[in-house]
Every structure is written in structure tokens, then in C-alpha cells.
Length: 307
Length: 283
Image (cartoon, chains in turn green, cyan):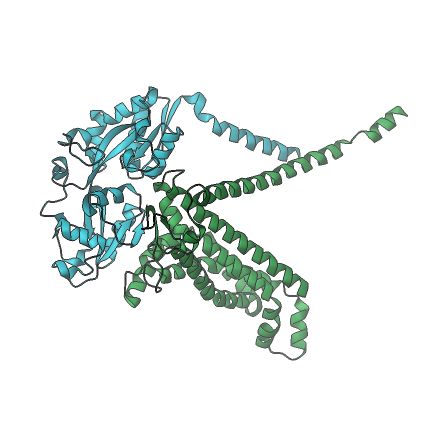
């Protein structure tokens, strides 16, 4: 009797094992959460020091157009206008997404609707290969091919937003394409069958049914691509020219948040204004990627409700 | 399950091993900073380790600013810098001890299509401040001036601006953060002008003489060519132990006469002049 009660009340070996497993997986996830919180705290504490410790004004930072943190203006305020970089980042991001989206949708339609066999056998691996190319390679190709091409067609030095847009376009195309493919594949088969049964041609089915139904997924993929473009540093730094000037046209040197960050961080001293203001840029980048994530979630939720 | 747990513990064990691997193997030393100095310190470090078994020199780049702030905070033993600590804001130069290990000269370079081999200091200044916008204004071909600068705060840029711009502000223009990149862009962009250390001068670009003085090592040694800077190794307080040994090794004839010139620097012992942080000649 005692034995039975004992064995029933005590945890079995399997139950213990399960508890250990639970513990380990919880440890892993809490570790990740901790890392994220630590990064946020670190970047925010450094980035906000510009405004609280060094007393620079937020509007100077967000709307000023003169960037030279080591010197001051006539009024004695530090020249930390980040608007040229903010504009540069947004312009290259939107332009590259604008060019990449039609290509991605076209490729995805071909791969899922028109020729799935060829799509999965040849195009899919090719696109996955493109994702795996390191960004420095893209940057180098941009520097040695795209920049001279832009220079000979449009004049100027060739460095600028246009060259950056082309490089980013190639970089985000595979991401957007493969996610669009997933979105199109997720459209239920009976949508297509019903459409075809009603006498629609394949083309009508594609653009009136499949693409319409996949809009939330396609939007998500575009925002994903934009998030990638916004955060890209190395390749864009090699072709954009890194001049902290307001971009007047697409072929004069400009800069992005990331390019200024990577260029400056090694040349500044921790704790000085020059360094802190770079952390402010980093904070801005972090907040933007947070925003992109939120937008993706919102699109996902809306799309889910419709279906 | 057991296998997985074994794997986990093995990985964690490995992490611990790597983190304390250097402790029981012998002494090690961290030298961080200027990427321009990195090849020299790395090569010297390798030779030092092969002579002194069990002593390791870890060399990292990151820029002169990183080197100075890391050595000031005590995170590393040696901070490599292209600049005097006095030239950087946020650094308390009194706490650091300067060890000048080499000299590097810098020369303006232009694209080959410009058709100039000599320039006056005044014109060079006007180009970098944006007063001259076409090369024909100073006798070159009819090409627009494309100024390529280095990242602000970088050692090369501070040195160049000290000696060429004399306190004036350079125009806002495109910036690059590596010398190799600068040379490639100047070589391929019509009308481009920038500056690189002597080591990077080659046939793809045209180096300019200033007021008839050619950018050569000999002119730097006599201070006829003024655009040069020291390569510093900073320590916090007087160096001791392995740090002291390593700096002494870098300053020894063995390194100064072989490695230093081979990597494009000028040995500190061959300099006929000495400059202080303010740029005044003190010898």
C-alpha cells in the first residue's frame, strides 16, 4: 500500500524529464528576451544622452540639415542635423521597394501560377542563392559596375541615391520574391478552381482572384523588404557617397543613417557628444525597425480577418 | 533527450573553455585602434609571439577613437592611434603615455585625367574648401573637381586638414572610410581628388607634388613635406611587463629597420625632426 501511494504521489521519470525540458526551453526564451531588453536599454541610454546629458535639442536632431557633430553653429548649439540621413534612408528604401515590388510579383506569379515546375526546380534555388550573397559583394559589384554606369548615363560622380537604389533593389528582390511566392501559394486552391469554373481565363484568375486574395501577404513581403533595405549598411555605404547633404537629386552623393553610423563609430570617443549622437541615430534605426515590425503584424491581422 | 542534454552541456562547456583559454596558456596583450596601424602591429605581434613562446598579442582595428577611449578606460593595454591624444576631445592626455612607433606621410592624389603633377598649397586648400570647382582654373583639363574626403574624425583626415586647411572648414562632400576605397574611387572617377598615405600611392592614381616638393620618405624625414603624422601606441600610465616588452620590441632595430619600411611607414629613428601635438617642431 505504502509503495503504491509513494509511486503515485512521486513524480515519474518521464514527468521529471518533461519538467527539465520545459525549464531549458524557458531559459532559452528568457535569455533572448533579456538580450533584446539589454540592447534596447543600452542603445536608448546612449542615444538619449545626446538630449539629456549634452542638452542638444530633439528638433535640431530631427529637422536640422547640417551634420558636423564636432563643431557648433553660430548660436552655440552642436551641428547634429540628421535630416539629410533620415531623408536618404527613406528615399533609397522607398525607391528600391518601388522598383522591386513589380519584379517580385511578376517572378512570384510565374513561379506559382504559370510554371510551377520550372519555378521550384530552377528559380527557387537561384533566388535562395541571391539571399545568401554577402552584402559586401553586392556593394563591390555596385561600386565597380553600377556607379560607373550611372556616371556615364547621368553624369556627376555616379555615387548617390540612384546607385544605392539599384544595389538595394537587387538585395531585397529575393526576400520580397520568396515571401510573395509563399503568399500566393497560401491562396486556397478552390479559389482558383471556382474562378476557372466560372469561365475566367488563367490571366483573369491570376489578377482578379489570386493576387487580390494574396494582397496582405504581398504587402507584408514588401514591408519586410523595406525593413531590410532600411537597415542595410555596408553595400549602401560603398555606393551612396556618404555626404551628409540634403539630397537634391538622385545622382549627387547622399548618405543614410547606417552609412554615417558605420563611418563614424570608430573615430569617436565613448561618452562624447560625437559618439552619443551616433547612438541617437542607432536609436532612430531601432525604432524604425520596430515600426516596420508593427506594420507587418497589423497587415497580418487585417489579412487574417478578411480570409 | 539525454543526447540533446549532453550536446547542450558540451556546447556550454566549450563556451567556458574559449572564454578562459588564454589564462592558463600564458600572457596576452590587447592592442586596439587605428586600422592604418593594424598591419604593422599585427606583424610585429606575430614575430614577438614566435620569439616569446606563450605570449600573445591580440590586435584589433576599430579606429583611432576606439583605441584611445579603450585604453583610457583600461579595457585594453595598448591603444593605437594616428593622432595625438591631445587632438581628440574626451580624452585626458595626461593619463596616457605616448609611444611614437613610426611616421606615415600622406599625399594628395588625383585622377590621371586631370593633367596636373604639381599644385600649390594655396590651391590645394581652395580645392578642399570648395573655392575651386574646375581643374582648368589652375591649369588642368576642363573637368569638375570631385572631392573625396575621409570620415570626419579619422586620423588621416585630421592630419590632412591640420596641415592643408589650416583651420578652415572642408566642404561637405562624399566621405569614405578606408584608404583602399579612396584610391579605387579616385582612380575611376574623372576629376576626383583625395589623399592617401604613401604606401597606397601607385600607378592607378597621380600623386601631386606640393610647391615643387615631391611626396617622398626623404622629404618627410627633413620635414620638407609637412603632411605626415606619427603612429602612436598609447598606454595608461607607464607600461609594465609584457606591454613594456612589446613596445620595446616594436621600437627595436629589428622591427624599425625591416618591418616598418616594408609596410610603408617611416622608422621613427630616421626622422630628423620631431613635432609635438600642436604641430610645432621641437627638434
